[in-house]
Length: 215
Image (cartoon, rainbow, N blue to C red; front, side, top):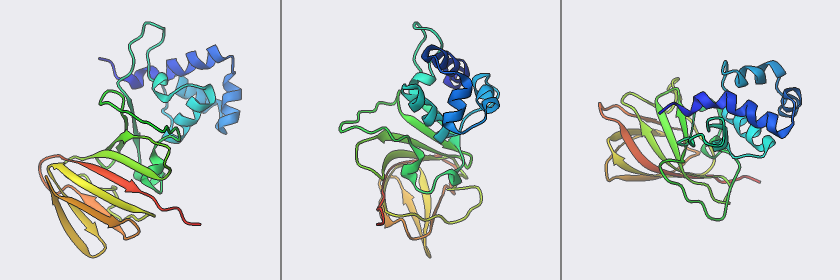
């Protein structure tokens, strides 16, 4: 099966053309240059997560539609998979699009996936109307850590995790905790923290991040 990312540029151009919106107008509304948008449509560049969702919203389609092959008979994509740098968002809930519903059902074939350069992967498990919440499956390849710089991160809210397989080393403040299969953890995310897979096997777990909005 072809990688759905191959369809992004041509599909984006097809949908934009069908909508009757010029490339220059889309670029203006997205606050990007026409040449940058042209490079995306020609497959020479890939948009950031934020730009991708902005394009879909502007064209009035779901993000998954942008990853379908051209034509009505084209096979659907197997989900959204985008590579990002951890520093591009301050809170885990900021990694995803803003579309929410009172009921959200997700299967393995249509999950939105965030792949970070540090070897970490997030798969979104639900998107309800509750703001600042992130429910996901996380994966850490052997040697992978929260970010390539090795720096501790912190943000508003609380995190809860359950390990499915493998082992993850959690550094939370001055505390170092091993999280093995069947074990769980919960902590205040405002405490500086970092996760790292120090083992030789991949780690996979279920993670729930609940953000607290300050007023």
